Image (cartoon, each protein chain N blue to C red):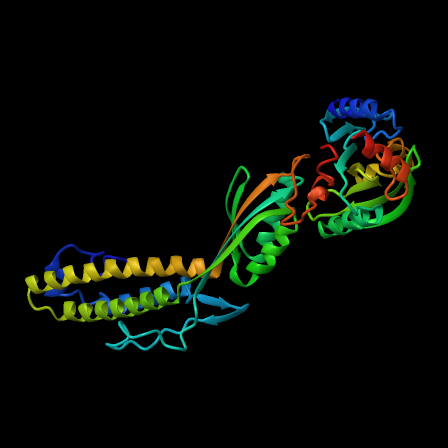
Length: 250
Length: 171
């Protein structure tokens, strides 16, 4: 969505306000078209809960929604984060295999630097993928967290609705402005609202991405011949020394 | 080397009672010594093949049955597939067991691991031979000889009361 609606074709305020060109589209119509295009390019996010998907249902905008508690039917938004430390026998092969597995799942490799790898995995497949990746080596440590961002998401959705409504009202006012000073005043307010709306939409896109694509940080260490295998509280951890890694040579 | 020195010194100390708790394990043909410390010796064979001998103290009640079951269970939990078991008998007639495992992990080459275990009153001896599975075919018949060249020290578990009494007296 453009932050300069109505300013693209002319910088003469009189041209628009006092004597609009007959063939120029109205700002509201243009805004509606831009929103339609944006919606097509960036569809409503989906949330994933226990392996199911549900479209986010934004509530009707009323004066109360901005401060009202979360509606019961508002789909839960959860961001999943995971970190795993793996000792792999062949680091290069493991990285290649993980890349392929992540791509197959519909995710992507966000970064790869030395033994550190960050991958994004579609939320419904996160658990299965973490297990599969864990099977590529010996898990030396792992942690998983789920952050419920439903309230943040709801607040953001509500704020966007309010800003969009305000933007439309200001556009109506702009069309009805009778003097240059009136038009300029409305224009300033409209620009301010448009900027806020852009920022809120950006945050929403980021949050949607975090909800739909879980983040898994991986540390892939080469399994050295003398690598120990953790034995938890086993009183006789001697079997940690008995391994292919501790005996075979690369 | 350290293991050998310790083995020799302890052996010399107890030679009067005829029970050597630790013994030397020299490089078998085709292998070279790569690492050695007081508890372990490691040898390198052809390509990926490695051989390792490790000694652990035994504890009261630790029998061959107990430790072999412990070893087998824990390795299976770690993802090793048990391919076979067979009895061993060390150079000095201490009974042992051999376990052959295969390790298949996604993204890794298939590896083999053969483990020999001998248990005496005082010690547990573990011999390991590992490498790429494709190299195992040419080695499998050599495994018993590689493992049985070990001469475990200490008395046979619960069967050699004379030896144990003499060992205790010497301590």
